[in-house]
Amino acid sequence: MKRLKIGVFGGGRGATLAQNFKLLNCDIVALCDNRKERIDWAMEKLNDQSIAIYDDFDEFLKHNMDAVIIANFFHEHSKYAIKCMEKGIHIFCECISNGTMAEGVELLRAAEKSSSIYFLAENYPQMIFNREIKRVCDTKTLGKILYAEGEYNHPGNPYNTGFRKRYNYFEEHWRNYLPRTYYITHSLGPIMHATGATPIKVTAFASFAPVKEDAPSAARGGDRVAVVTTQNDDGSIFRVTGCAGFGAHHNSYRVCGTEGQIENLRGTNKVMLRYNSWSIPEGLEEINMYEPQWNDKDEELIKTSDHDGADFVTARMFIDCIRTGKQPEHPFDIYSAVNMSSVAILSHRSMLEGGVPYDIPDFRKEESRKQYENDRLSPFYSGDGSKPNIPCCSNTTYVPTEKQIELYKKSLEEE
Image 1 (cartoon, rainbow, N blue to C red):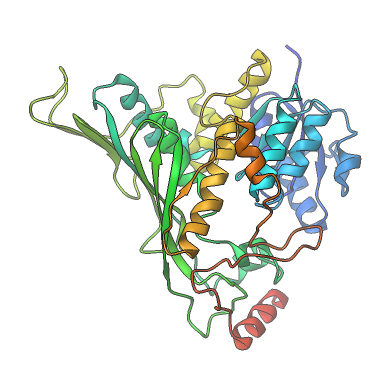
Image 2: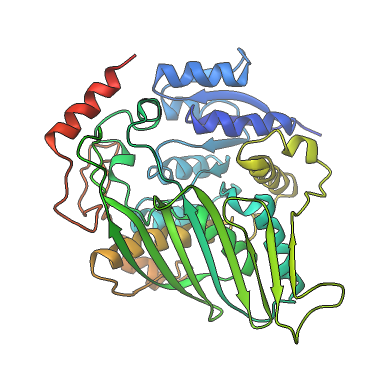
């Protein structure tokens, strides 16, 4: 079987992902990044001096490659994915798929003209407890699914200089302008995968609590969490966070039906599966608590991978799509990717407007595309020099103090 040639765009997260493709007998042939320190780190991580190095994406794309890992800045994936589509190169794209609604329209129009496989590299559905939640949902023993929750809670130490220098290293960096609803696929993706539902309406509220005044910070977002509620195409309701910063670090998910419910216990891989006393399936108890097992032929490789093995499984799914010539299924396909991005973008607008509901457009329909094809509202600075044109925080006048910014800049200079 032909070994696939993989290019990496983004030497940080991209190199971490690329390690899984090496485990899957692919060749990493090219790397593109414009920061020397990231290139050096990636090359050490990949341990292959034959990899070609580029700092220009268009030149990088001329390299002989079957697929590209797109792992550049969070909100700037779509234009590079479109360039891959125009050349028939397959795409393994980090989340989110598009930073504006107009980009979502452009991405889908390009995809429908292309032979490229587009795979949203959303890995959290493949964490062991979320795989188990999906498995139980597929048995239909929970009855009709009515409600699901997804929490991606990732508070960060504002005094952590090391994190700042690696991930948040200039004042206009996207992390300094990230609304709490935008980083949503780790909370939304797993329950979309488990239930098969797709959001069609969204509303959101945020809780404002900026970091302390002695913390080095250039962050314009002072919210700690946004709680997003969606109505879905099957009548169910989701309650999810984006990247939240409340309480302690955890990832938690729960799916509830008419007959029972399943959830992982916060901060652990353990699962609790519960049924009503009158609807207990044969062979189970009313309350079942256990640690799911992988039961996977690649278990040893999975255990070497980041995000508790989910990175490997997600990469393997992408390779299977390329080998079979089939686009991925919901929620890893491009329509689901744009749907999740739309939830991220429009729930933020809902939050800014006091929870006003927004319909999530169905971009399979041209009338929906027409509605949003010129909608370029963004809370971020862009690579082309464009400035934010919508607030990133529920407190729209919030900015860090001059002292915080001074401390932030000093921390970047520390050895």
